[in-house]
Amino acid sequence: MKTRNLFSTLLALALYMTVSSQTQNHQAERRTLQVLGGNSIQKTQIAKTTQDIETNAPQNSKITEVAVKKVYPTLISEEKSIAKDNSKKETIDNNTFNYFNNANCYNSAAFIGQLLEQAEALVLVENTLRHEAALKSGSDKAHLLKSANEIQKQSELKLIQASEIAGKLNLEKYNKNQMTVTQLSEFTHASDRLVEKVNELSDIASFEIKMAKELRQEAYAMHSTSSKLGVLNNAEEKEVSALTSQEKAISILQKYANFTGSNLAEEVATK
Image 1: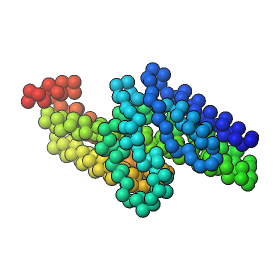
Image 2: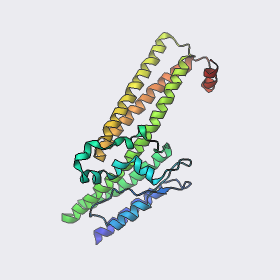
Image 3: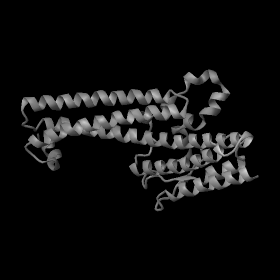
Image 4: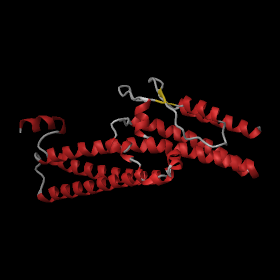
């Protein structure tokens, strides 16, 4: 009984920290993430806790529960689908929630921050459970560790969602920077050596964004949330590196351009 009371307290703490981290000015839609299973927590308690955890969409980006399930079908229910038919592991259509084809993904850096805060709150609960498990033995210890593992997975799912959004935003930024480099190149008076340097930086950025895309595809083919998250983190590093190379190229071109960046569109339109 004491152990069950501890679960209730910790899950209530996770709920409080998750909800308090969200922006108060937006009305969120309710979603149920079926990630806390097993016998370690009462099913009625799971339903109440997961349904009460809300996430905020950007003000002008309404999204339905159906759309959310379309975005994350495997991430949310991977264990159930694998258990149902283990032979279908290699045939899951990961493109349904791959950010490159995902029209339903939130385009909000603020939403990334909310997901990271929620994941951090869950990690605190997980750590508390593991600390309590270290003081127990037998079935109580196993019970606590199983619950900690389940909450760890829920935290990882939120980090994966955050990575998907970051990936989409990074790709959009890359495409925008690529266009800026092309346009600036038409109006720059840089030396051949500097132009060569710009081309080199652009090639590096192109290679790194390609590698990031391949890493993300590799991650979506995995069925472990921990493995997915590790590869997605590597992909994000490649994306950030690609954007850095582009920014260096843009800086060089802007320095030798015969107009300011503010009237770039006007110059291009009249050329």
